[in-house]
Structures are given as C-alpha cells and as structure tokens.
Length: 106
Length: 142
Image (cartoon, rainbow over all chains, first blue to last red; front, side):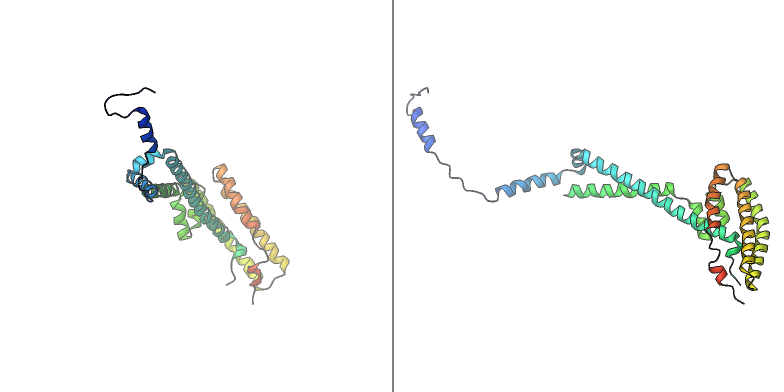
C-alpha cells in the first residue's frame, strides 16, 4: 500500500485502524420496510389507468377478449334459447289448433 | 388497487356490452310479437321465412282445412259424447290424423324445400306425440 506523508495526514495504517474501529450507530427504523412498501403502493396507485393498462397490456387485453367472448356467446345463446322456446310453444299451439283430437268437450 | 377495480369495471362493462349486442343480433322481435299475441300463423310466417305469396297460399290452405278439421272435431266429440266404442273413436281419430298429416304435407310443399322439411320435422312429431287416450278421452261425460 502506498504511504502518504503530508503534514498531519494519517498514515494509511492509522486510516485503516480508524476505519476498522469505526462503528456507525444509526438508529433502527422499525417502520422502514412498511414505509417503502407504502411508497411503492402509492406510486402505483397514483399512475393513470391508461398507464396501468399499458403496463399490464397482456392481462388486460386477455381479460377484455375473454369478457367480450363470454358476453357474445352468452347474449346470442340467451336470445336464441328464448326464441326457440317461444317457437316451440307456438308450434305446439299451431298443431293443437288443427288437431280435432285435442278439442275439449263442451 | 384502484386501477385493478377500474380494470374490473371495464371488463364487466365490455362483457355486458357484448352480451347486449349479441342478444340483439340473435333476437327475433317478430317471434316475440307472435308469441305475445299467441298468433300461430304469424309464427309460421316468421319461423319459416315465408314471403307474401307463400304465406297467402298457406293461409288459404289453412282456411280450407279448417272446414275439414271442424267436421273431424264434431265427429270425434259426438262419438265421445255418446260413449261410442273405443274402436269407433280410434277410427275417427285416425281419419283426423291422416287428414292432418296430409294437410301439413301440402303446407310444406308450398314452402321452400329446406323450410318445408324443417316444418314437417317440427309438426309431425307433435301429431304422433299426442296422447290418444289421454285427457280428452277421459273427459267423455254424458
């Protein structure tokens, strides 16, 4: 190790000793971790939805696609089921209206 | 959390919009109207996509058949009322079934071929499915 010999500048050996004996007595902050997570949470919450959506583009677009598909299949199926049920009811009434066997006795 | 809830709302809204849109696409207002009014002829027109000419011809056929149907009906009811033998009632019912089947086939012939087949597939099983010795026969009373 190179020595420095200018004035009162400590020698490398004394510097090393000083550094070796140096103890930092910083007070522990028990809330440190919680505070960090809170700041992270606040920064995430503060971002606009558009930014949030872009950051989670795959998940958001997947959920939207699934929602539209489910809605489309459900809506179309529900409508067709209702129409089919009405059609079946009318078909029965149509045939019964022409079926002399089904005429009730007066 | 707020953005997640907004996303959830957007997803639910998209699902509802798709449901509504495709419900409207799959819906049949004319069928609803026919069902509301219990109009079987309107059902026939809507269900089998009949044009004016086809519908007019079929309606005429129905009007003509209603005379024969009324006669069959009267015969069957008279037989039941006088407690005619079961064989006689069955014979009258067979006349009714044969007549009805012939009528439905004539109606089907006035429709486009594919619709006619669909029509027969829909109505013929309902004739066959009728309980011959079900409720109407039980109601034979003096």
